[in-house]
Length: 225
Ligand code: ADP
Image (cartoon, rainbow, N blue to C red):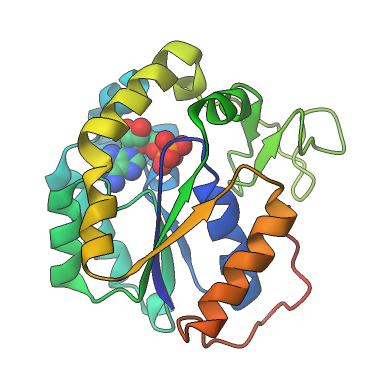
């Protein structure tokens, strides 16, 4: 399955992408995670992109497209992949069409008030990129990752002022991507206001019934959290 997961900040793209990636053993490619790793490692690319991310602006298309192109060339994408947070502009969507033909675009959305509440309680593991929420999905041990014990961190761009700008940027630049895939008949819409455990069952069923998800699970008992 070659899928893109799109939608506004805090909608749940990363949570669902991680679930399908672990259950079906296809790579979860999050441009946000790739960029945060580059910043943490202090690479030349990290230096360039940090100023955009810290302000909630988009990283320029040419940089993002190059990064994704390189990643999709890796052999582990042979049986499929989930792109999370890409494409975020029409230019990126058109560039992706040149690289490969995707099977589905999953549009995950929630009302903005819910997203802001989720983002203000979000912590992430800088090592394995797992996502926690202090209210809805807290770690078992005080701010440590359940899987690797790493100290959880808050993303600087989850601060309320930056979130506001990320939403503005989303409506101006990323929202048109939804219509782009709707017109191509590739769009599946997912209202993620209810619990993730329920939503994921419906989404998985839809993907299987429509013949989009044909892989056999490599880890059948994976849970969404
Ligand atoms: P979100 O929770 O907003 O979906 P991400 O982790 O996907 O967050 O992205 C964090 C930041 O990384 C974005 O605000 C943006 O600055 C940058 N970024 C990630 N993906 C892209 C992309 N496809 N195009 C441009 N910038 C991107």
